[in-house]
Amino acid sequence: MTEQKKGKTEKRIRTRTGTGTDKISRSMKAKMYAAYREKQTACHISLKTGVHKQTALRYIEKYGWKERIRKYNLRVNELADEKLAERQANNLVAVQIAISEINTAVQAGVVDPKYADLDKLIRLEQLLSGGTERKETVEVNIRFNKDGE
Image (cartoon, rainbow, N blue to C red; front, side, top):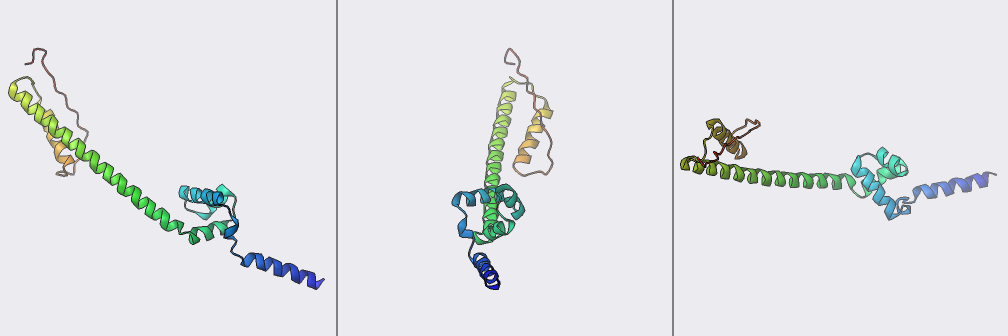
């Protein structure tokens, strides 16, 4: 009976010392990584995919998922910053065009602007170009006369 116990123990040790990570399919690895992207914990991976928490920890370390997520988040933030800067530049151009058109219309006598509206546009232009730290909602009303006056 002792020999049988000894054989079972050796068998158990052999399976534990094996890599173990090679037994999981590619689709399961993909599911595990998707779960890790949702929430960066081994417990979350375990709950979402049914693998053991220790298996999830091994995969996190073996495949460098922490570093991959960190690099991914950095790239996402860079792209968001680029898009924000592009939108801000486009808005600045639109405000500059509006100021130019208002000035042209005022000189031609077509528009009777409120000076507060022009002031708001100028402050918005300064804000978009980084000239001021103050942020406020700007509403501009321009009234054109029916006769073009």
